[in-house]
Length: 183
Image (cartoon, rainbow, N blue to C red):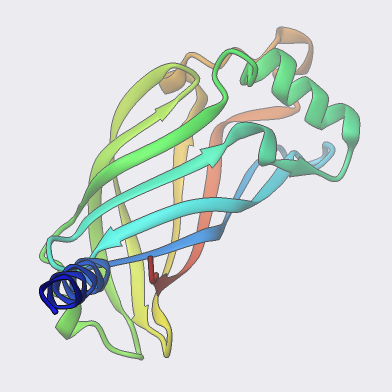
């Protein structure tokens, strides 16, 4: 009987802990570094992990760099080998806090929040601040954001031969649908 009670308490505690976190393993990040009058430089990664602690507002995200897909295979190859060096720097991460986050006050209509944290890409870290719209969903939470990063901040060199065709200012779009996860 003691074993059953102890096991039940352990499972209940584990369930309660899991309820403080929502996550996705198939979030979407799209980036675009296109320049007008030249070929589109755009990629999407649909296997991004993001987790939010609903009690504290802590947020963390991980994208495997080789998960970004381009329309043109050669562009993808150049991105991985020459620009981002994905064998040497295989992941991009973000860790931060959602300012004034109160999960109970997030509605189905959505609310704009400021998120501050540290982005790591290409072996370099940069403090960034973005805004995001968070909405409650039936399963958890939707997070959508658009922001810009500069390739120079992450020591990503754009070769002079293509420097007129690729923007140093990269537009990034996040689309995450986070859900409660049972362990």
